[in-house]
Length: 189
Image (cartoon, rainbow, N blue to C red):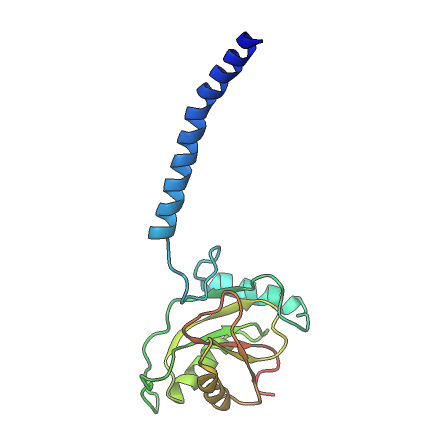
């Protein structure tokens, strides 16, 4: 019986060193990723998204136009795809107010170019547009989303838009430092 225990003990000791080495390497790599990894806390891009090109944007619009949107936001994270930050304003009537938060404009509607059109309108009202892009979620009506503590700014932004967009607190992967407009087919109604 003692021979069996010594054999089992030797086997466990032989496996213990490689298992601990693998575990140690995993802990170190995870810590490095957390410490050095990308900070997307102020960005609406999800980890699997890349900036869209015009061809990709056209196919995205076609796909989203063909799929009807459910009446409430999804339980899982929506997939916004964004373009690079918008160029600085040209020929607008007002300079952005530095005390206002920046704005992200995302198009979920079937209308091509609507995000850029709304971004221009928002700039003319004195807001600084950070990004425009497409939204692959299921928002049922045009909405201005805001981070905690920015409801008053979101209401002010909603007043600068046609129709009566709703104002709600942000969810999941929307920016936690910027206002986000998600445009749907009812924009301006």
